[in-house]
Image 1 (tube, helix red, strand yellow):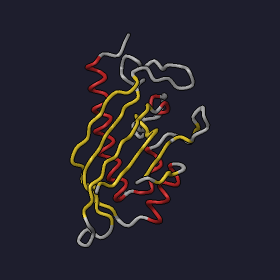
Image 2 (image 1 turned 120 degrees about the vertical axis):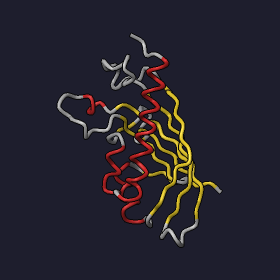
Image 3 (image 1 turned 90 degrees about the vertical axis):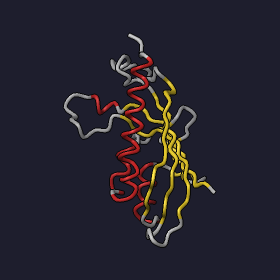
Image 4 (image 1 turned 45 degrees about the vertical axis):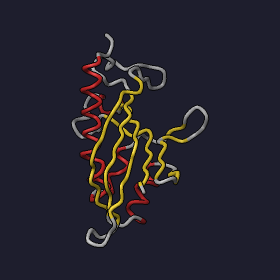
Length: 167
């Protein structure tokens, strides 16, 4: 059974909403959990690493390095998301050439999530407010659908991320 437009819209919207409601609070106050939002390290066929993470023009080698940057190098941050949008990129996403049984339920697609808002780096009273724009590509978490995983597993993981401060 093919993925209907209604299911694709519902699933992608819920995935985007869940990402926004959990990822930015983690960047603010639960930085030890940042790596749990990303796919495990892998490589594209051309050898480029996944997840692909770019933070304000700087390529970050992997999720662990991104988490370490936030834990060790970044001042406190406060994010205020103003808007987000999502679109299905690939309604027939496969992992290792096999399609899971979740095609009709929307668990076999990739999703583009675009977020914009304001961020303050540093103490809130002293920090300047800066605009930001961020894009994510989410892919289904195969482990989340495995039997016995429970509700703790994230349904969608970040495969690609590009953050930019706005002038």
